[in-house]
Image (cartoon, rainbow, N blue to C red; front, side, top):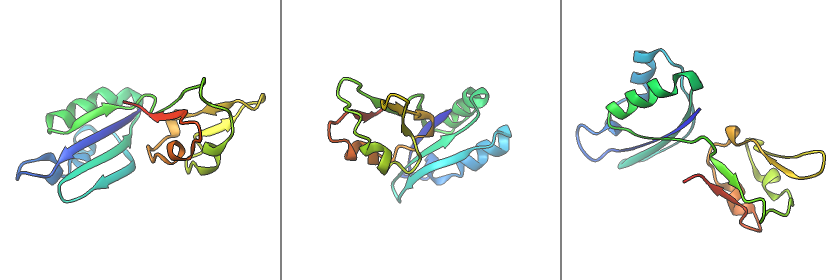
Length: 132
C-alpha cells in the first residue's frame, strides 16, 4: 500500500527534523520502500510503499510522530469519458503504469504510480488526475 507522508521542518521538535522513516522501520520491523521524496529546508513530502498487512501499524506510528499520512489507494485516476486512448501517457510514464488491452483501450496499473505527474501534463484531453 502506498502512503503519502507530509511534514514540516519549522520547529525544533517537528517530525521533519527526525529520522521518522528509519525509526518506524526499526520499531515495527516493517520494510519501507521510498518511491519518491521531495524534502527541502522547510517541509517534506515522501511517497512510501509498504505491505498492505502492515499499513495500519505504520500509519498509526507515523501519525504518533506528527507526520500527516494519506493512504493512496488509487493514486492516478482516469476519466474514461474524456480519454481517447491516444497513448500519450504510455510513452511518458517512467513506471509503466499505463498499457493497452487487447481492444486497444487504455489500462491503468495505479499501484505502480509514484505521483510524478508526467502523464497528467502529457494527456491532451485532461483525462488523468491525481487522487485527492
